[in-house]
Image (cartoon, rainbow over all chains, first blue to last red; front, side, top):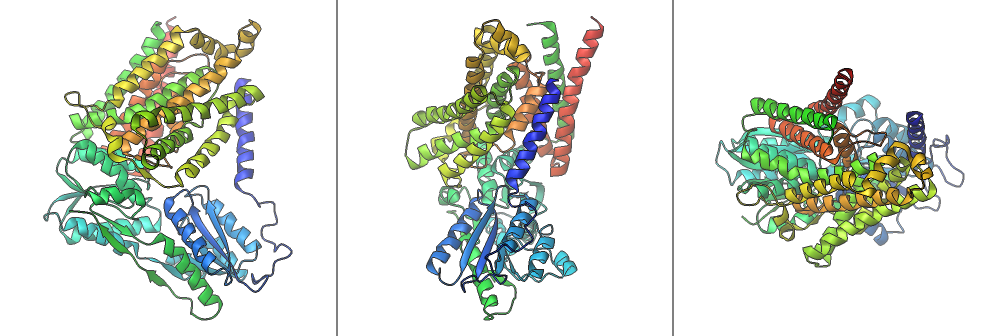
Amino acid sequence: MRHARLAGWILFSATILSLAVVPGQGGCSRATPPGTVANGKPDGKPRIALVMKSLANEFFATMADGAKAHHAGAGDRYELIANGMRNETDVSEQVTIIEQMVARGVAAIVIAPADSKAVVPALKRAAEAGVLVVNIDNRLDPEVLAETGLAAPFVGPDNREGARRAGEAVAKQLDSGAEVAIIEGIVTAFNGQQRALGLEDAATAAGLRIVARQSGQWEMEKANGIAAAMLSEHPALAAILCANDSMALGAAAAIEASGRRVLLAGFDNVPAVAPLLADGRLCATVDQHGDRLAVEGIEAALAILTGAAAPQDRTTAVDLVTGQP
Amino acid sequence: MNRTRLGGWGVLVLVWLGLVALFGMLADHFLSATTLTTVASRLPALSVVAAGMTLVIIGGGIDLSVGSVMALSGAVLGVAIVQWGWPLAAAIPVAILTGALAGLGTGLVTVGLGIPSFLVTLGSLEICRGLTYAVCDSRTLFIGAAIRPLAQPMPILGIPPTVPVALAVVVAAQAILSRTVFGRHLVAIGANEPAVRLAGIDTATPRVAVFALSGALAGLAAVFASARLGSADPNAGAGLELAAIAAVVIGGTSLSGGSGSVVGSLLGVLVIATLEAGLAQLGASEPLKRIVTGGAIIAAVAADALRRRWEGERG
């Protein structure tokens, strides 16, 4: 009896949750609502949708702030609809947002995909409805793009090159043959894979030995536990290379607790690592200028919409930030 | 302390020793002082949260909001130290109070409106996470030297000072459960709430109080976690409620309320932390870690169920 009631409540609350999380799924998301014009120009201004991942992630919060500041300075050129998600890896939520944006009659969608593959079909439907798709931050999978026939110019940083430079800055301080460990991001994300490859490139080029490699799922807490375990298991570990700063912060705490001198690299240059850079606990991180990323995507979309530029890929700047030696 | 309970704890200690032996054989440096320090430093946050969760579950409820409450308390702690320049001694009580108030709100709504705590805490999980992002503007706060001493290993003992504090909290929570009127009422409420009410005992106060206590302990966990990481992370504690519930269940507490122990939950936490450290030290992949952790939870609960059946057959 008690269990039946509990199960009932779980079912009930799951239903409520799914309704709350997927607003606008009321059956008409594909149709164009009244009052909007299909080309997204209700009053002559193109309407541009910015679709990001979780705004709880400070990288995307910075991105959204950059886009809003840009829009405030150029408000008469376009209309901005900025969208964030509740959950970083919730692909279905991002697909829902894409469908809503098409329904709202936007001229372009500038998107940082939650998954390199799974959002492509929804974007293809958007493109078929006449919406321009510009891909920023996390690159869509080229094979899936070719298979679906979606053309989406990529505007974003070269994550592999950025990570390679951070790894190189650490490698310079080590002798050939030194032991290093890599803490990766989510392994299914394209930028996670690219950063891991870049860190590997740097280690291989300098003749370092990669003795451990695990995913910290982009999380500080997870990376802290993994770094502590790596330090226990590899007494000669000389450096830990992390695919983002959140994980580098977790690793820094583990290194400090171990009382050893181990070099550290991160990625993103979030404000919280400034003190670590200042006293050298973090050797290097990479600034991919998140605040500029969405703006560059929006500018590219505007240029393509007005016919000023052809839809083509563009690499944005990544800068190495090094700490005090 | 009855024999059945001691038997349950014995099974858990055996499971834990088995894990230690297994990882000791598989990994090169698992049986080392460093590993001991690593596992010990991961215990405090989860064990105090699990202590609060144990009391809530024994009282017939559940608290899904602990992870978010921990993040909120951590954000308040970080902002108080970094942005307001408060000393640690002033910031810690405020962080714990934040957690207690969040728990009090949950308890008042649950009991006042007669809604299952599963649903109310599902709501407060979201509310507290939202408040966390609002408090720290979604940004990680680096606290650094102001809080790190709490998590640095002490000389000679080799464990951080947070560990004895957490152990003291667990002992106190067990004492509250088995030696106070509040604790005994909680067990009775979890077993049969209407009967307790008909006996003329006030059930509302303990039911609200246990959520406030769980919130306060999540606030204390935020202090421990921030000390270990040297930072306040707005995404901290995601999924913590599931780890805490797993520890409580492994520890032999009944999910339907009315029986269980805080010490058992501590052993559950020990098993989970050892498993986590051992798998990381072996360099296990993320999929393998998840599969093994899930399997271990089921195995630990099954071992306890088998022991009960066996003892039941023997009379």
